[in-house]
Image (cartoon, rainbow, N blue to C red):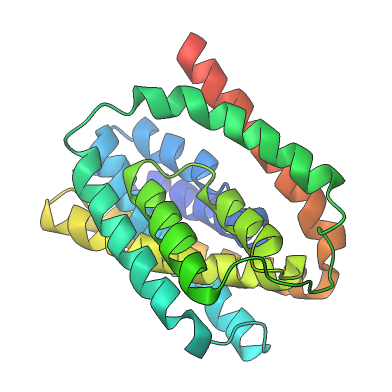
Length: 252
């Protein structure tokens, strides 16, 4: 498809903002997917191209967090494998079934999570005791959230963060760092299978990837510097905003 230079520059700016927001609290797709649809893409092309550009933002944030010592890759290997497999299965399945039921359930889940983020004493910059073994976490959260990200996607960053805080006992700062690692993994798996289906608009995705890469780094720096004081209110705000948008889309 043909895209004007001015449109590409606008999409680059949208990706920069989305990458910054995504690295802090997730929800960058609230900006990028509507922008891609407004360019005349089909829903499948918009989702596929969004996965391409989002992969660069999540990769940029992940590398930053890893270099700052917030991520240890060794203990995460099995979780990454489960996340990749779950996302691949979800991406294949979403092309075959109707996702309308998920559109009704998701706002309720996000509103409930925003209440947890707002009131839970575990939402801090201090690590706690894990409630699941690493293998159980990988199988339950890695596979489950990876599947959801490939199948539908909105709000997955909130699901990852909630799981790392409530089940893995991580501080909010470390939970955000590991969320971006799993985000990158599920984005990459989904991208591979969308690309095999010929749905990715590569020029647009790669231009937006530049903005995502820079935005991912900026957002990660803010998380590292501010911690829970920044992430907690943004998680609540993004969860409620996404809920409102999904409900509006259903009733409009």
